[in-house]
Length: 437
Ligand SMILES: [Zn+2]
Image (cartoon, rainbow, N blue to C red; front, side, top):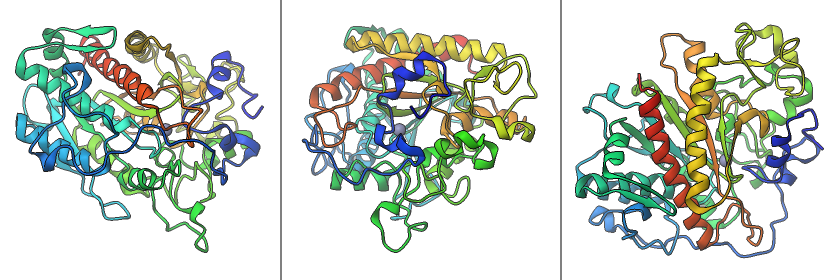
């Protein structure tokens, strides 16, 4: 078994699914599976524009499910849906200053908070960084739609077996929320139009001789956190990311080589008081907290991703961290990320009756250049930057009947929407309770 260095039994539970397909982890080279599976494509992708250019607005399942949800939102509908929210509620949207390889822009929105200054926003939710993880951008867009509807109409929100009051909605909105529902529009457009189980973006600059499987960068290996594979033990360096453009975890030509990851950095640089961050993925039924590099430890601050002394042993989660290497996180920070993670993980389990596991990211599998580790590492790499408590959610449990297991059935889509949206609510409430400053 490839990740046999890990002793934690939770890792074994995570191996069967999650974000990467089993065949993509096999043999040391995380390479695209060229043979597509037999099966259907799950819930269909929407055609046209259900928001009519923004003249109608999205409304999620928590506030009464008024929007036609018979299909998954296409790329354009994320933009028109946000425009609908602008028209209906007067919210502010923005476009990040980088165009994707195919010339698309990335639209974000900001809601709640105590004012419109950038420093009033303390939470950031990001969706659809991995193209095939269908339901991710829907979850983020419908969630903010629910918050805005409930605020305007003085109602609460209900997600499956979990309900929230209007006071909860007010408290959740008080945190100040920035969202980018769809950070990888080129990849999602390609996946939705080809049903190819596409994970990466569509940047072909590293592609060799026209091989279509060498297109794209894994955006969630492109962030500036131990991006250089020299930072990792040789036994794990080929697993945490890859320098091979044909790999599903190809990490690009440099940290932040891609406009999509630059957009995430731009948001964290612009909204300088963001304290809490979720990057929304599928599938594994996991809530993952920092770190994703190696086993957490709170006693030896000098053992951290900046210290090159430990480059040769970083990423081996089975070693004893007292004598070897574990990634430093203060006991207070660890307590905070676990407390909030357990709170919203439990709620995700309640919403649709499917069990979510809350655990450290590294126990799924060690990764370099991931968004959550980058966000939490910023204040350590540069003490002038804000501390950002960060999570990866792997919603859903896969669809083995589909051509791509990331493509949900209609029932799975609904369950996942209940879980992510209830989880977001509880996450915001936990953030407000633990602290926004
Ligand atoms: Zn993913």
